[in-house]
Amino acid sequence: MLTALHGVRLALRDRWAAALAPEGFARSLGVDLRGRIRVGDDVHLGVRTTILAGVTIGNRCVIGAGSVVTRDIPDDSVAAGVPARVIRSVDDYPERLRARSLGCGRLPAAEKAAVIRQVYGVPERAGAGRAGF
Image (cartoon, rainbow, N blue to C red):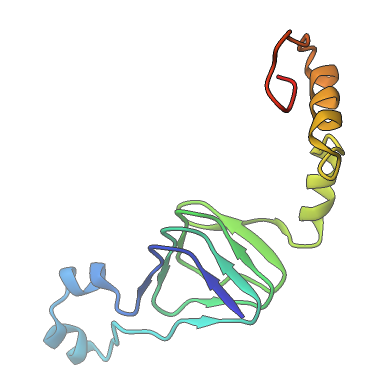
């Protein structure tokens, strides 16, 4: 399964090289300006990700929004940036989220509001909305 959000661009041809070396010149050198893009299984591409020609993205990868993938990304990686670089493995990612979590994701709204007020030191206001803020 591939999840590609809006605006993902696949650059099947190296436009920079094409601008610098006309097709006839590149052909005379035996250079092919085109390349296949390979995307593995269970890959999630963020909004406005660009993948350049000749790149392989491994299985179970997450590519951050706005990234420009210029080289291969190994299996089980989270990558982001311009150019995209591996920032962690997909196995480390949930652990990092849990460590930063307040632990109130499944609580009812009123209890969640109480936890958030306690963590951030926000006093309860009289006549606050449904969540108590």
